[in-house]
Length: 137
Image (tube, rainbow, N blue to C red; front, side, top):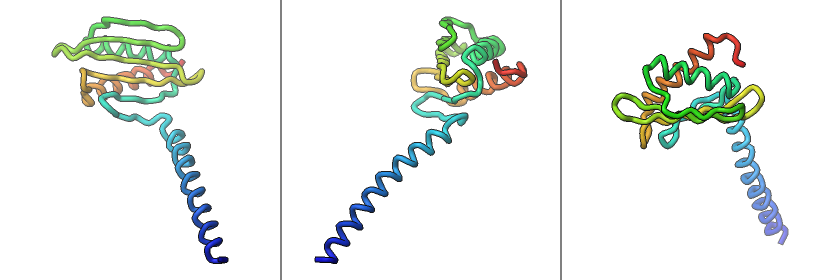
């Protein structure tokens, strides 16, 4: 009887610990994700230490630098949605969302299924324009 109780307590504790571990891993993963670049399901995403305004300005400059037309540009202090197109007909969507006063989430998608190489080319340009601006306002 004593052994059965110990087994039940042990299994209950093991179940609780495994459940909590999942939550801790999720929280740690969320914290580690800030600032990292992720390419998932055709979209390149990064949470940036720059405001929506700064990322939008850098995005416009990057599209201009790459010779890509700005077909659509909806912008305010909390978000921006842009559309452009490569010469080969692949559409480009850039979404910028407010996260905090000094950070925003950037999402870039090229084409219907995504094109990681072109998305990274645009992201690299945005990073370059942000760093050239010196101050990320």
